[in-house]
Length: 268
Image (cartoon, rainbow, N blue to C red; front, side):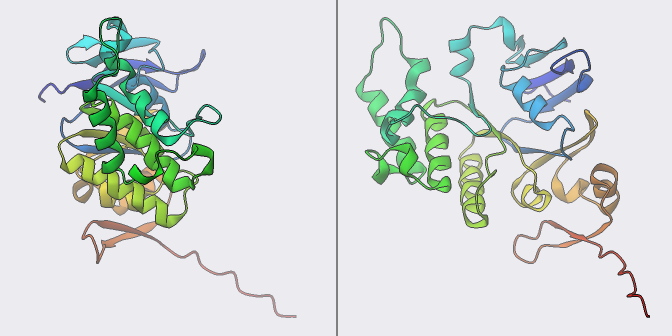
């Protein structure tokens, strides 16, 4: 297995005396759109938080570019790795342009203040996410889908080669879910490494180029969706009896749950 830029090495992850994951080792493949899937409380978001340096392992380490991520200066990490957290909260009254501009903070310093280069990068991030016409509007005035695109624009403005997204489609209606995932897919096609946590297995199979399936804090399977998404895997990970068919639109695996037998109505 080749060394990739971001990985977990024998990592024990959790929030107290009962770890969620023990001795977890996994590499994020460079240049892929990796999606972590699994049932609730299986350790998906915990792993992503560890990758994002917001959760320190209780044992082992998270490695970024060959070094323990917690041994590296925060500003240096922020130039290489961007995070869209679950349910991000913006300062009250902030405009779209101001929020996206905050993505440039890792590139600022005592000797380097706001520049025309920063202005250009912010403009490109807003154009790339389709929010260039919303610059003067307040974040609280936007729809859920618009807000999510603005947050992604802020992460884009960091100009990091690696982007982490924790449940980016949560609370969005179906149209905005696919809008955000289409945007993520385009960013991947442009060469970025993406890692996302998703709940919808069919969306994960459609958009991911690499899947990591988790259950009870452990990695059950990983690989290309068309290689690992089987009825046996879905039952093992989600306790769901199903059949797998070819998605007629994307030609990716499509999970179709089996219908439970109906209980006969009582006669009497």
